[in-house]
Length: 216
Image (cartoon, rainbow, N blue to C red; front, side):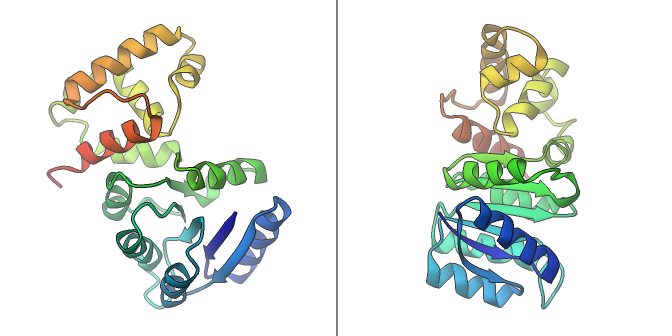
């Protein structure tokens, strides 16, 4: 699996390269600036991009903007974002376009190599890898809006877990209820949000996030 990695801090970039190579990833490029990232994504066509949000020269949200531009040029390019902050505007745009795997992890909440590597693989395979804090912030922005405001507390809890990429079985296990109960909650959520029910976990998460992004 070929990876393009963008991280401006040398020690962190080198550590990520060594960790990914230890798990049999091929590092197609490891870059430190936005222009280098844009060039690498265009020329190397990686299986997945692992991108820091804040890259030189702007040190603002250049990494995320480069990733969005790359996905517009190559729809479906899997992108896993690493950040110390939740950049809501661009995170919503990344998550709501409905094409390819996406992930958003907070650096200080990645606690071990296997957790990170699992997220990279999941995104590369077309799935999602979302930090719960990111999801909570994205959802809270619309907490008082209808029809999201029509969801019950339990339905909102299920929705947050869905948005993390969890299956119905995984949600049932975490909430200690039956999978049948989660299926009922899921149906209610889609009905209240006027969204089509889908058996594909990634599509349903992106559909919910796309809805939340409307009216921005």
